[in-house]
Image 1 (cartoon, rainbow, N blue to C red):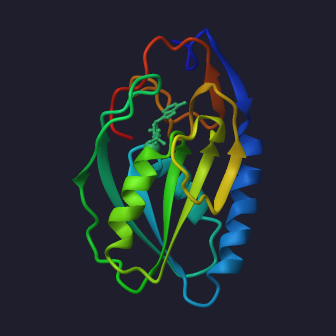
Image 2: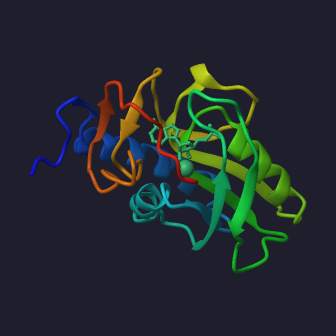
Length: 185
Ligand code: IMP
Ligand code: MG
């Protein structure tokens, strides 16, 4: 069985991804040198990037996760976001980085940032593997990004198409995927 579907092509190789993850990690090491950082992963897509990133971090790292469901579809109307699984620990007084696989419309992150900001963190930033800024509907401050991408549907490094391909080490474009991944992350 082929790992990649026939209509897919590699956008970023494993080596390119690794180089960018290292670059971003170096910036985080510098910024959070004094007190460390709490990484908040948005399940499930960000798990792969968060893991890769954290291995290059040389400051104290805490990790927590949340899961959301969003009823927006890539081509459809922006919808509602809901927290399905909340963080295990409070974030009050902490330096927090929300880790994402991709920032697209920004709607998910805007909701998350508002919710998390209300819990009194010392600082709150965004770190994403991919930034598809061309499709942004609402502005969100992205402090760290590995790659900007154009208007392609991508899989790999945590991103799925119908729950497949998250485990790919590269980022690949799927031409005309048909239908957007319908799940939350
Ligand atoms: P948004 O920024 O609120 O539009 O939500 C972005 C979320 O949609 C991401 O966290 C992904 O789970 C999903 N998503 C957006 N674009 C893609 C893609 O190209 N491939 C796979 N999932 C995507
Ligand atoms: Mg996601």
